[in-house]
Length: 238
Image (tube, rainbow, N blue to C red; front, side, top):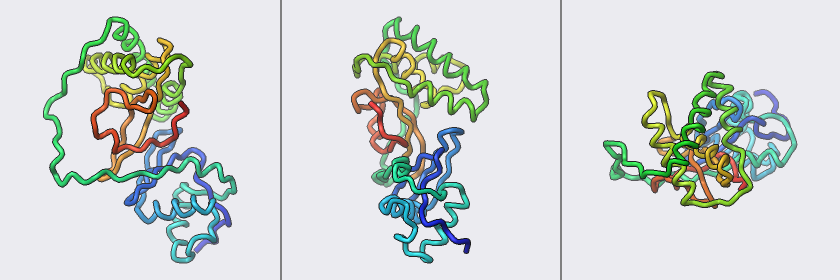
């Protein structure tokens, strides 16, 4: 086995969520997602707790798993404790045992004011048009666009009105408008109106799935109860 460097850190472009049963790695530049085993999640969590010191692991018991993560580009040689801030612990969803219901039709969306329909339409058009850049560039550009925050007030009711307007408009378009586009457009519309909100992107497990949403004062906006299953890839800057 190839000798491992004495210290390791997560690759700079990656954001990691370590669940008990899996590790989800998001490339913040391209949007590519990799899924690793529970053993990989345990190894990354152990390295995080040890500040990246490889000798703190039980090598060679863990050496093979560490080497696989290095070969996959998840871990790299380095000695910057701050880099481990890109790793977050994830909490597994509680099992539903087949009892969780899924709606058979789209739920009705509350109406909003004309102001939010106008702002939402412009914001959604901007977000959707970014797609012409190609998937890789579009992901990074949209992420930066939605991540900017206004310094104005944070109002949950106002944010809901913006989110509902974007959702209603999205249902009318003959294009793919999913949670990513909705959340990004809602964030942009709120910023244009001078309201502070946080764009979130995270993962849940059992099964592993991704979702994007908007938060105001730490509260998800216009989301269902299962939003608590999701762990954001990054800490809020709000």
